[in-house]
Amino acid sequence: MTAAHLDGSATIPRESTTDILRRIEAAHGTYATPPALAFDADGTLWEGDVGVDLFEAFLAGRCARPEAEAALRREAEAFGVAAEGGAHEIASALYAAFNAERYPEDRAFAMMAWAFAGWREDELAALVDRVLEERGHAGRIRPALLPILDWARSRGVPVYVVSASPRAVIVRAVARLGVAPERIAAMTPAVREGRLAPELGAPATYGEGKIRALERIFPELAVLAAFGDSAYDAALLRTAWVPVAVSPSPKLLAVADTIPGLVLLAT
Image (cartoon, rainbow, N blue to C red; front, side, top):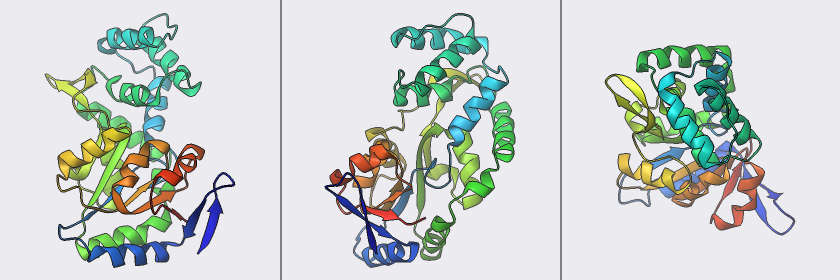
C-alpha cells in the first residue's frame, strides 16, 4: 500500500483491487442488515461520461424538439445564458455555458435528461445503443472493478448504481455488468402520454440527492462499500464502511479529508 499526496497536507492510501476486496470482505460480516455496494457510473465504472456522449450526439444531430423549447428558454434566462433561436440553439448555448462553468452541474445534468422532451422512450433507447457502440463503451469499463463486481455476485451482495446521467443511458450501459434496472438511480425525465416531458419525474441524483435516491430504492442504506470519482460523489462515499475513490477529480481530492477512511483504487 502506498499513499498519494493530495494538497501537501493530507494523504490518501492507494490500494490495489485485492487490498480493497480484503477490506470489503472484513467489513462484510459486521453488518446485521444485508449490505450492498454502491457505485457512481461515469468516470468510476468506466472512463469518460456516457451522459455527455449522449448529449453531444443529441446536439450533433440537432435532435432537440419543440416540446423542450419553453423549458430550455426558462433555464437559459434563469442562469443568464444568452440564447437565440429554437430548442437546438438554446440547448447548445446551455451546454457551452456548462463547459465554461457558467451553468451549475446539477442543473446541467438534469437538463441533459429532460432536453429529450417530445421523444418516445424507444427512440431514445435506439440513440443510446448507437452512441454506446460508436463511443466504444465496452472497452472503457475499468478492469480493476470487475473482480469487485464478481465478488458481489458470488456473495449475493446487491450492487446499486447512482448516477447524474440520464437513466436511459445508464440502464443500458450497466446492463453488461449485470446491474438490474431496479437497482439504478439516475436523472429521470417525466413521461406523459408516451413521450418524455421537459422536467424531471424524480428528484435530481446529484450530491446529497444521490443518497436520497439510493435510499428510495434501498431503504436500509447499509452501504458496505461505495465508489466515486467526483466531488458530488462525496456524500455517497460518506455512507460507506469502505469509501473508494476511483480516478478521482481534483475537486474530490480537495474534500478527501472530509470522507473518513477514504482509499484510492490503484487502476
